[in-house]
Image (cartoon, rainbow over all chains, first blue to last red; front, side, top):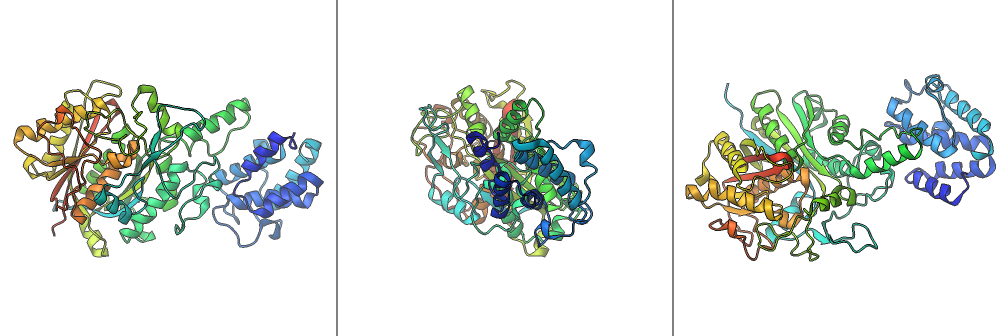
Length: 123
Length: 423
């Protein structure tokens, strides 16, 4: 699904304006399934939407970094991030799961699990 | 307690005739048009072929991250994430106006500062987001789908971006909206509730925002950009759409002068009325607009003989311009007054809810720069204009008092009176 011409066009349009590192990590993940690139892409999306951005990429910060308290992630930022991640990786994050995600590690690991469960359609 | 004098202390323009105060003044002085040929649906030969275009912006992408704007603006791109294209235009206009008025961040976040806005929302983004929702049978709902699209998107976004604490409100009276925002801003300052209000009008500029007006045959089918928008002319056949944003700082004079802000004009008063007739059309007699003009002048303590220039609402539609001409004759000709009259929509096109604050900004420049914009593209005035003074070229005059007219759907009429600052 994600590799169809139409889907690729949609993804290209979706990623307009995102940093090249995030776009590259996304495509590399789709081609090879390497989880570290998934992390870079997911955290890169969150970084993109944060109103006040840390100087470093989020994947360079400790995994215990808290989304709200440390990064200032408000509900709209979180929903923008989740909507984009769902679009890119063809996964669904339900509301009950969402409120359990409080740190970078929790977000990263949850996405790894969801993408793995959703199988080849995502990767 | 003395009644405060209220002035225009800052201006910002993103318009078809210029993206800053200097360019706009130059366009008004030389009657330089911002209207160009435009394909609303490329590849299709549609009857409407002109638009008041913006220069230096590209908001064709559905994603804000793909938009482009002129260099030099300092806002973070993330400020755009909840915005429609006219939010981008407004950010640029606000940045100009704030700098022009020498306002500091602490001034903006003071409880003395308010923000009043007008826009019609974003039909294009509404279509895009609703399509996403329908295509997914309700499974996929874009988080910014509401705040970036509905009328009010400007006040939501700008209030958060600027940290406004005094008051925030949106006005929805179609093409009279931003003039109404100016009026109520004036009242808030006069009542002592606020020291200043940032008044902002903005509109998207794309087929979704403009082309629906063709459904009521309100748009000009004249393909010539130099003649399509011709208010008060016998050959007028509809308006030319435009978009953009204008920001105006309306302020109690004392605080502005203490800060060393410029003074473009004093706003003496305003008035409004309602036609009580049609959803979209003006009262053919012009009675409603005449009442709004009279109320504005009464509130400002001036009479018809004091008005040197009227910046008319006239959009170049056959019915609307005739209605306004009747109103102008009733108010001025019958009183023996002959102010200069023109509609600057001949140059810009019609900016819908943006138009009132845009043209009030033009009036403020007229007072500050000593010019009266001419009635561009006017060759053969409509007989309804008999006796009205419609100069064809911009006059190097020094108007002392100006009346600005606006009318909108539902019969909303709003007028403001500005005067050259005299301390």
